[in-house]
Length: 151
Image (cartoon, rainbow, N blue to C red; front, side):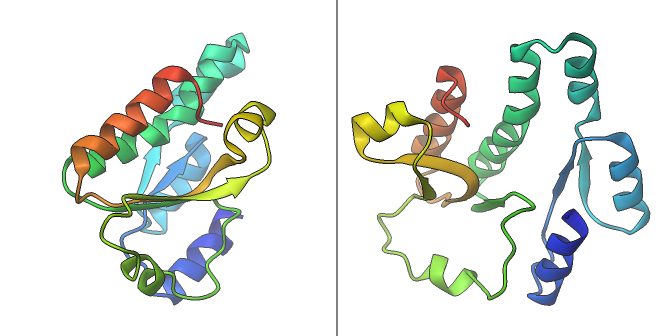
């Protein structure tokens, strides 16, 4: 699935992609193909040996910590899981957003608690973080991680 995602990203000339690889074999293959990747297999291996909820949360939240670090350094980030395939260039749409839009999220109808409280939930499979107000955006990301609201 990730190779299909990369093919579409390259076709659109999204050359600054970074893949979070969940296993060492995928990471090694991506590096051999000269794709930018981060090896997250140590966290996944820790979860595989314990199956503790906190370990799988660490696996899943690592990407959000990385995003927070990029935004903190003034880099706007479009985060997409491998299931979010770009068929058309989304950059013009992101750039056309009003200046006061700091974050764009994909809506979801699960989990139900946020839906009941706010009328919607967030699917973290597709998110855009603008770095203009980086302090507030980073605080939001870190607060979400702390509260366990990510996924």
